[in-house]
Image (cartoon, rainbow, N blue to C red; front, side, top):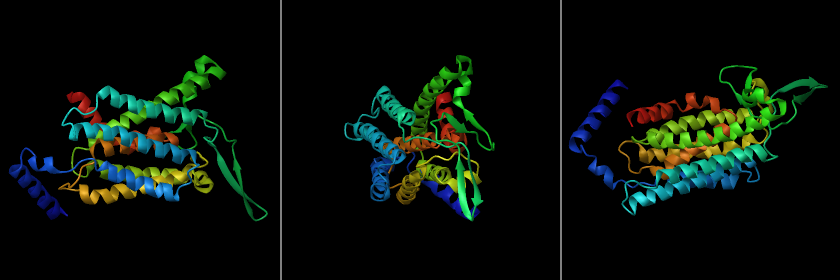
Length: 303
């Protein structure tokens, strides 16, 4: 392994000396995100339950963010405008998606959760006991069992009724922030061959496990997480997401033969952010997306 790393380093150093201005990369096609998007959508359309609200949200996220990134790449490549899409227009698209997701999670009757799930054997039959299905602003605190945090508790000073209204307003704005932050974070992370796709595939595996646990009564009880009816359908989407990224890495690993472009990076970040909000695991984002976070902070500080 050490020899391979040294050999790889020597190859990179040689390429830098041969091509210090990365002239060769100018001929590498971009908009590779289209490949990833198509590879995500087709399995979901074939295998997914298209009446599931969570799967619908993930598909809408993929299409909207893909379209936003495509316009940006189109301006850069076809019109030869390196600035691409206006920054405010890009933010407006991300905010719009965040509002769609946040408001859907707030008002859709299909979006519910059970905070507590338990089971016992009665007459040789497993009986599942669940707390009432509710719409909740609760979220999971990482590594802390038997304790969820309710955003409404931040507004207890408003009174029992108003604190829940304020909690939902906070949740919607948090969704907007998470979607915008992660889509931009993934975009910034897409600077080296294979980096964004590789990191995102690993994040996707973690979200896949969380989605499977949250959608299963048995695993929700065993691991003491919220039971979110219907969230198991996200596993189909995330399986397609991971498969698309791993397949894409064959062509994007050094030396890259195709780049994601904003079409791919914005879509990837949006998918991760929306999925985290659906599963009420947004407090785990600094852990799952630590690379995105550090790179974003680095760019902000340098700017």
